[in-house]
Amino acid sequence: MNFIFISPNFPRTSSFFCDRLHRNGVNVLGIGEAPYDSLENGLKEALTEYYYVGSLKDYDEVYRAVAFFTFKYGRVDWLESMNEFWLELDARLRTDFNIAVGTRSDRIGPIKEKSLMKQVFLQEGIPTARQHIVSTPDAGRAFVREVGYPVIVKPDNGVGANDTWKLSNDAELDAFYERLPLVPYVMEEFIEGDICSYDAVLNSKGEPLFESMSVYAPVMDCVLNDLDIFYYTAPEPAPKLRELGRKTAKAFGVDRRFIHLEFFCLAKGRKGLGEKGDFVALEVNMRPAGGRDPDMMNYAHSVDVYKIYADMVTTDRRWVPAADKQFYCAYSARKNGHHYTHTHEEIMAAYGGSIVRIEEMPPIDWPQMGRYLYMARFETLPEVEAFFSYVVG
Image (tube, rainbow, N blue to C red; front, side):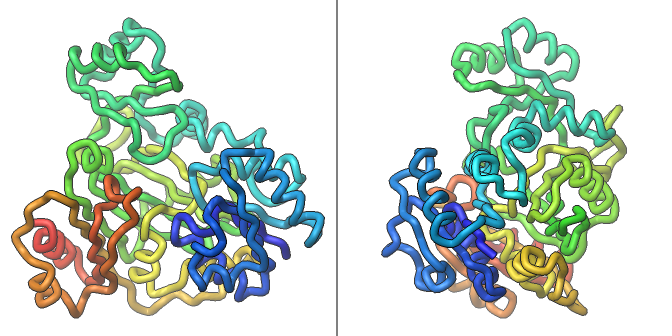
């Protein structure tokens, strides 16, 4: 089997997917803009061959790389990047090289553009916030009269919380229109509640071989207000989230993928959306969760999600058994310039027996993921909350 991996070095978890695919006998062919000598040794060992390109944004250059691999190794069975930024590139390459597995260009819109995504939610009866495609100030004011302040504005085709704002009054609304970016934007009603993800590895029938749930502090507020980062992966998905996650995956017709779907868990009942504790769709991401989330799933569920994915690719089955005992895996990260009550040494003295990872994140991740992370495993949610208070308090 020939598997082309776009950007196998970033995000860093991509190298673990490459490793497990290699161990399963897959011919892993990497294309990336990082020089070969800069790749970690484990990734080098997992790759059959690596093709360096000056920029993954240069489609002609990437096209030539895929053509070279096709000429040298034969038909390409699979092509993935595991990176939201390159999903459209993946789809275009699958289309041009007639790669059977994965989304092609004619179906990429609803999984990349939030306006088209919203249409799928509404058509399939999946609860979701009301949305307005940004056009004129008058149209924006009319939408605000309908849903009330605050509202969220974000790129129609964007990644994470980048270039996203919360508008709380007329002055902020007017200021947004004065600096309105050239790219298309959407405006949505504000939903109060935690963000919860439904993460799953789907087989060829779109059935989950693995499921997980993480609960996040509001990422947008953490970025815009420079707040500390803390969140956790739960031992099991909430039953309502599991049901809605499966329904959403089916609505988008995806299969043979590792997916990361985001929902609000309502902090209070909202007319037309549900009662307190119900889930409301935020957006879909047809790739694994970013940052160190896949590793958190491993610690929470005592499994190897990278192998689960590789086994799905090669056998369409799950061979990794479910663990007898599962945990909460907590992520708490510190940022530059913040004052903290406890030192690193005090954290290790208090929680050294529970901490499973300490790491400095890449600079590109500091705004959203913090700089210095502490990852720990616990049996109860109160223990998680106490850990958060100790690390970033």
